[in-house]
Image (cartoon, rainbow, N blue to C red; front, side, top):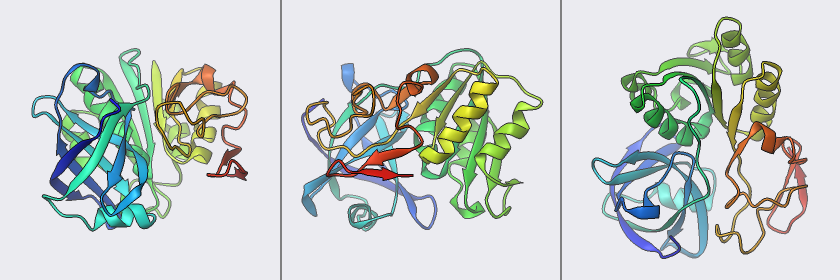
Length: 270
């Protein structure tokens, strides 16, 4: 998994004005077969000293392809957004653990580009015959991700936007509270801004719904060697013990929802 593969971009989908999906051919064999929730490390020829973790947003075993979905938020992602079909990127992975399926009635909650690993999980869950409700949240209608794909999978979608341009006007937390008044679930999966996930954690814990959360931290090696992505107080490495953590795991991570560390290790509060 640690060897680079130089892969040609087979297709680029402009999901929104700021988010694109990149599709690559992928040999589905052994431990290289990704699981929903895992990530890959991406290296660009334009920035040879820079490498970033990216969530896998689609696993297509029938066509031997995977996809990553990323938002244009800085120099690295801006370079990738300027690539075209036929250009190449260095990819290594997959890394980390993945979501585990538990039960038949599942609530999936994604905020913004956090829908990337969530959509991947939803594909698997619906293929397995589970009933899946999705809370898909964004600032505005044009930033909602994968709606058609999720509808085609058979999942039930409950959108919410900060400005009320699509679905429920409000945050993912509000939409979740609203759903839980009339529905029950065997488990939940969550990915989005950590402040959002912390509030969702409190809501689901109060309802005693077991959940799994996708955490993000600054990463360098993705193999658990450098220790850059360790979290307090457990010392767990997000790239190895994570990025998916259960409710019980998160109770032990004291920094969850409070702060993270920058590249130099300095605390930055959310």
